[in-house]
Length: 131
Image 1: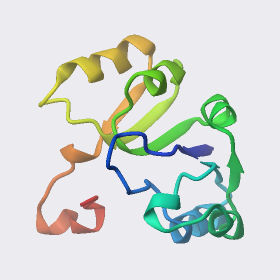
Image 2: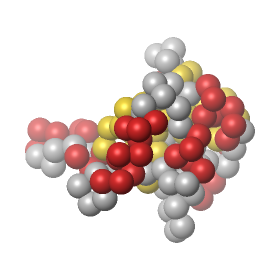
Image 3: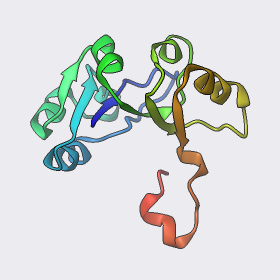
Image 4: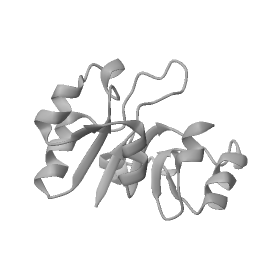
């Protein structure tokens, strides 16, 4: 399994989908993690932190070409959406109930999407809470 972490491109978005500590745990389980160059910079995580945690820091082209699963904060738009290919899996705040068109575009490209805003907000589900 290869997980890709692209840089967020939404205006004002400073978060990153995976932090180095999480990358370390995934790498320890044998999962390859690719992080786009400067993906964590706005969140205070330079590329070196990801490399030390076991990720490979790569170009955006390599990230989208080699990743089976992509994790983002915001849903992809424009060029990001065009980079996604059939068979890839995307985990992000997709907000399909607020705007169906982006979810429809993912489906048309053959991308399986998991929307983090659809996770339950109950006490038992708190360990899964993305907020």
